[in-house]
Length: 243
Image 1 (cartoon, helix red, strand yellow):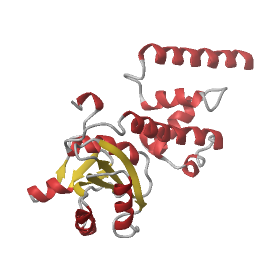
Image 2 (tube, one colour):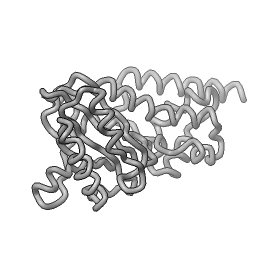
Image 3 (spheres, one colour):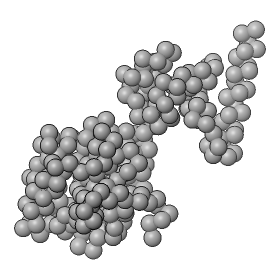
Image 4 (cartoon, helix red, strand yellow):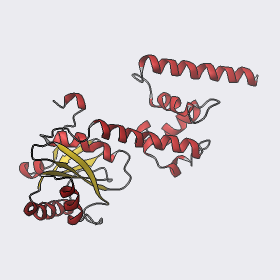
């Protein structure tokens, strides 16, 4: 009986893998896509119940992958090996996206800057601050992390911004940080930090183009918000829409 059950699971796994290789994940439910991933962490047995349990507990595939290893290991049947694999996926996705859209691209709009910066905030559990540096023609020179924390409680240092921008030979830069509150409304500290950094770097010949605030699914431009007297949410673009 045990051998028959083992063969049944092996056949199911092979069919799921073959379907993915033939057609990708189009039309798949979150729990089915997660089941395929779990095959590689748990080499034997039926992982479908575990996939359902994870989706039910966290709410979606994205939230499962964003969960910390400690949170994941609280799920019965999920050990350190599986938690490490699940945590690895967003980290690899971020690096993949960064390398595809990195230095050398010409940035003319805030939407294009946001497309480059978005991967740096994948799965972020803390507030992070980055700058995207550009040359005089708008070519991306690189992205540098400035600090961890928001503009009020982190040591977002003008010196760090200046050092990063000058080291890359930047003429322009975008500043960006995320709100872990999931609300993209600029705070008073966001406006103050923007003005302070912009005023300090302008005499050095480095101009801030914009300050972008990231949340899950939204990016807000402080420059456009200031111009329009409200919150300006950017329309995110993909690589195929760049040109």
